[in-house]
Image 1 (cartoon, rainbow, N blue to C red):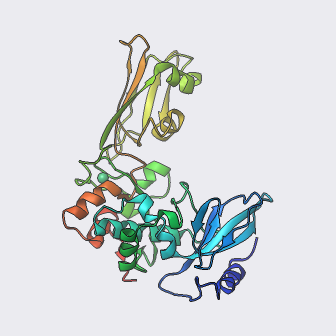
Image 2 (image 1 turned 90 degrees about the horizontal axis):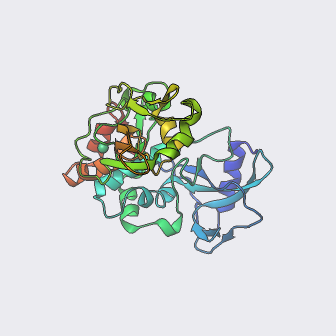
Image 3 (image 1 turned 180 degrees about the horizontal axis):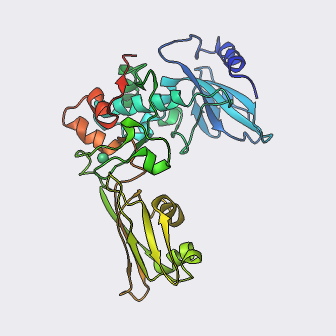
Length: 331
Ligand SMILES: [Zn+2]
């Protein structure tokens, strides 16, 4: 592993003359993005316009290979955070959405990325679901790029440091409390707010059915091999039940996050369950699941942001609503 200071010096030096990142701009710091955890023998092709090709896509920044602790060689690119955001924002918020929604998305994504800067890893963020989707040059769109430029350098802070920010597709009408979702320390600006803006979102309310035998396969070891009844446990202050009680030969209560993981994120769309019940009237019994919102629900609600912005709100107003008590820097 290369010390961060050495790595940055190398990376900055290697970009000079490529037409890429040859100026250190303090208002738009650089970050290191993990493009691939294993290059599998592929070498990035650097093009004259400063982009590079790898794994069939075009990317920005200065690529370098880095040895991982497991012995594989990873590909990391050192990149101006706003150049990186150009390939993030369009994947998270459709470019047809109002400019203020794109700006709010950009500020949250910038804050997230900069807060992930690490001294202990040779990269800061991963270009995938575990951090933020980054699609490189192919994902970019002029509307998103323009929105990013108009809020260049702006971040959310709290207590003098970068705020710990999250976002998800639709909160279902009340954002979640970070401490309840991830059992972490409570943060005053992530306790959850009632959101009147996302009610027209496509997954504000949803329902799914799965064969009962699939639920028995997932949870039967804890219910004696059968599933005869279910109920939701007491909701937290945001309205989200903390667990699903599963009744069988023996009974158990499963945290909602575990319930979601076991049945799949495509089935259980969010952590806000409104009803879980067995439908035994069918020839093949089913488990009926109803819920609210899409995603974990913590922090900024993307669909709420869209409708909030369409009603005339600016990015600052939107961010103050979803992250109350934080400060939006001037960049
Ligand atoms: Zn919402």
